[in-house]
Amino acid sequence: MKIGIVGYQGSGKSTLFHWLTGKEPDPALAHATQSDMCTVPEPRIADLCKIYSPKKITEARLEIVDTPGLSRTHEGSAQKLAMIREAGALIVVVANFGGASAKADLSNFDDDLLIADLDIITGRVTRLRDQVKKPRSDREEMQKELEALEPLLVELENGRPLTNFAMSAEQKKASRSFQLFSEKPRLVIVNVADDDDKPERFQELARPGMELHAMSLTLQRDLAGMPAEERLAFCTEMGVKPYDRDELIRRIMDASGQMLFFTAGDKEVRTWMIRQGGTALEAAAGIHTDLAKGFIRAETFSVTDIVRCGSEREIKAQGLNRQEPKDYVIKDGDVITIKHNA
Ligand SMILES: Nc1nc2c(ncn2[C@@H]2O[C@H](COP(=O)(O)OP(=O)(O)OP(=O)(O)O)[C@@H](O)[C@H]2O)c(=O)[nH]1
Ligand SMILES: [Mg+2]
Image (cartoon, rainbow, N blue to C red; front, side, top):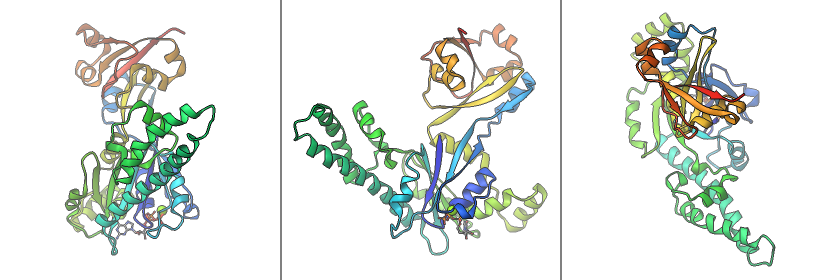
């Protein structure tokens, strides 16, 4: 899944991209999107490695996409927004330095995204209303789509994002191809001035179901680039704290509606990403289509149990090994082995 970093011009998006991925975005490509992969750190993978001594360790990664900033005067916004439609989740970066107000920018940016969606749905609904009046073979289908979209239009017209709207299957189907922003999960980062010593105060801008973090991104990126000793000296002298980047990445994954599970053996210990609520069959498909096709069962135990037991043999001896069917919902920390027909 792609995670799009979005926000107004100069809010610190590229600085965040650099900090998260370790890759400096190319300034020559500032008008386009730039993406890079970012490992999702999972501390328990080290515990599994002690048990399995694998030849190889592979960690799941998120694709982070840096995007050109929107102008506050909306110039070129439609084109820039079109570049991030396909992102599965958004990180909204709002600045609170150099005269910018995070509170105002956050509210305005939300409006910009909502208006972009409203334009699209208004266009489609207007067209459908026109089409259903005509005698055409697909009239019934169009009527159905229209009925599905009209309530969504009402929500957007009233300034309500669709993240909190319980959509019917028909509505999901009708809206999917538009890749609406207001349906995308988001996480907000308030980028404060380097000398801001109370970033916690921005928590009041968070809304239910929307996670918010506040920090100086330039400071964090620079700290991450320092050798450990220098970082410690700098932090002590300046009275600043490094933000836990690994934890932030896990929070980004979580906010995007995904989670990790493990596969483990002496060849490879590996983390995989799956949507929260994903089934054993989906996990199998994520590993290899053949595993999903020939799926028999998922042998499952929890990472906590194997770390406590120290071996698979002991897991089995204690009866902690479960045989799960296709529709089993994967839980955080599951270690699974898919049994399948070749
Ligand atoms: N004071 C302060 N300045 C920052 C901070 N983060 C970024 N800046 C400055 O803001 C400017 C923009 O940073 P970028 O990361 O390039 O911002 P951007 O959002 O990628 O900008 P565009 O891609 O042009 O939209 C740079 O001059 C940074 O030095 C911060 O935490 N504090
Ligand atoms: Mg940039």
